[in-house]
Amino acid sequence: MRKFETLLLLSPELAADAREALLTTLSGVVEREQGSMITADHWGMRDLAYPVRKQMRGYYVRLEYTAPGATVAELERIIRISDGIFKFVTVKLADAVEEVA
Image (tube, rainbow, N blue to C red; front, side, top):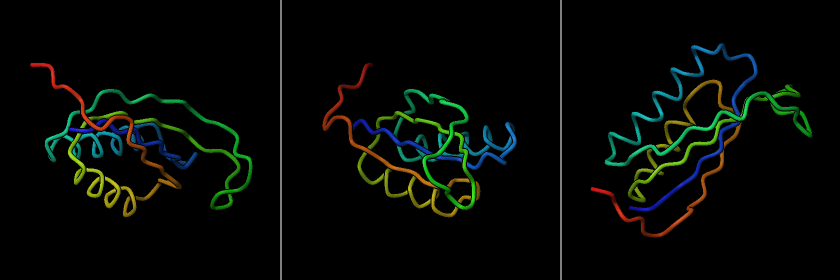
């Protein structure tokens, strides 16, 4: 198991319940692929340095999770086909994470 972090830039036009539904879906993907979600930090609405899809604001969310490497590919596939996600980036934080029993 590896530790990953995914930073999402969501549309400012998404309602709070739609945001939560989207994050629940992404958490479900991680857990379905034998991973575990560590934390989901809501950074909130921020101004952007340049327009993204004609928007000057965006809602940031940081997901931290442990999962096998193949899980990231599936998670990013779901992110790409989801509406409301402008941009994302995934970073590997650690190669091997000890699982707590």
